[in-house]
Length: 326
Image (cartoon, rainbow, N blue to C red; front, side, top):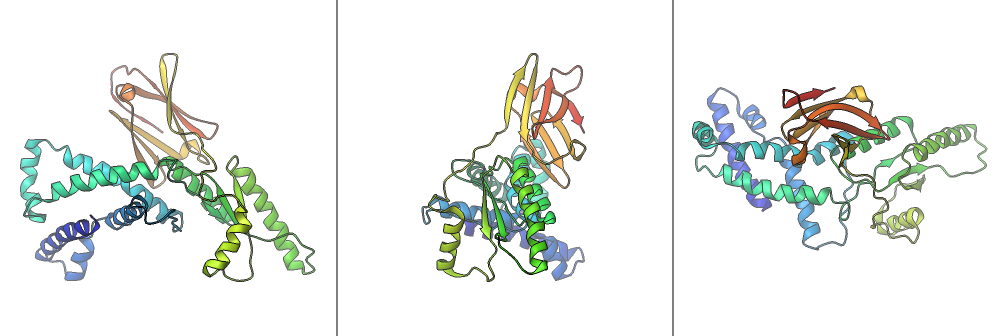
């Protein structure tokens, strides 16, 4: 499957690159512009899923990149599904109009079949990534102010896309001691303040602490000792916490969609409802949420934060079926 994807999308990129060169772009620029956004991320995620599915490993652990890159990686299934859905839902008239353009990129017309096949695989992948019985996410945070802020941002975006967090690792914790050096005394006191903030901010998630070592942790024996220090005799692969999930409830004549979004201010969130879709935007990231059928014809009337969750209230519309809440 991965080889098929690389070969197939490679043909698309090659055709796009040739077309751009005919328009006057040089070879390097045309190849850069022809890159399919997000395909590397999709291939990487599918490769991870394949290893987990085939049973080659008991557990697949991903040491992810900083928040921005990780969110981009994890948002790719949703982004791809959105575009794939638009392509596959083209009616026959629109498709006939678009066929000359499609042929310019893929003369054989196999791009639509590839999009459909890949869409099916990505849909299964997305279900696995968001299944709390199979997958879990654990931010690693040092007891430093900026790192804590970054970890809170990671928690927000993971919640936005419905990825289950079951714990937090507090890394590089200086152990208590009678430090004679004034620098170490100040460092320990400052870190203790940030460590307390981590425990208070991320509650009720379980928090494990990894001590600050004077050397880099290398090799399986040292990793084993670190694991024993953090988890003791507890199985680190089990799910430690199951938090609130996206849910719809009814209150009188209105419905309420509840989406856990910790550490976000209301004025940072923009929501747009179109038919059976609710688009939630926070900064540069957005998520398209497919609403239950009961909410498709409802209008979003009120949005507010309650207990670290975004609550969107829906009611029967007066005259329109599209609304925006900011």
